[in-house]
Image 1 (cartoon, rainbow, N blue to C red):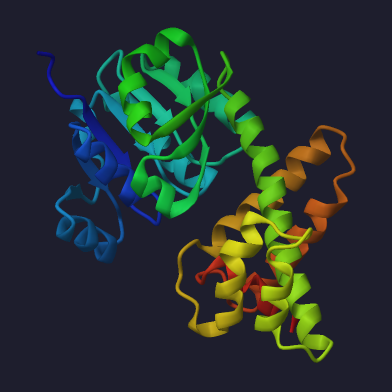
Image 2: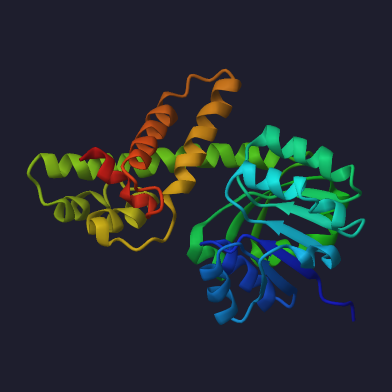
Length: 287
């Protein structure tokens, strides 16, 4: 019998923690890394080994990056994350950073003798818990080979190409749709309110019709809760991702007006101090 795969998961936020727990349930030896003391306590209470700094990466087979921003990835690499990893181990980028950044990271990491695989994903918290994420996988097949069981534990692999950054490009398409659909749902319910309708009744009237969408059905009820909505998916993610997608689209020469409009609404929500709340609360930017 082979030894269990040793995994370090950096970032134990809304999806990072369930991903770490899913890997532990699959038989991997998992250590979670998180700078937030509250999140470390929550992870420890769930039975996960935790640390504040990625010391376990020095003997990990796979390090999964679940941080939010490219700046956080930059900081980890500048602090010597991959220089301390075993030669031949795998850095698995699950953060949404855009294709250009992923390609740059791949070049830097490979120079340290570490394999690099680009695997942004979609699916949300519930599907992370269930191991049902859609994984946008790109990288050298030889780099993928050692971690196929890790990816299988997390969800369905969508093969996007042999070059890191291809998975990020697929994720850009996904985030354009997701960002716009959430804003469309918010705008529709805001319109119902302005027309003097009961937004809850308006939601029920349209949620199963031609205008239905998964995001309307999922986020609509939380939009109706207003300030009482649970924080399931952070608005900060879409503040960052919508701006990133708009920039990537502009660089590609696409006049992507819908994502620019959505990015404006997320930025307005940020200005209202809503960044730490649930992404459904972008509806409050319409007030």
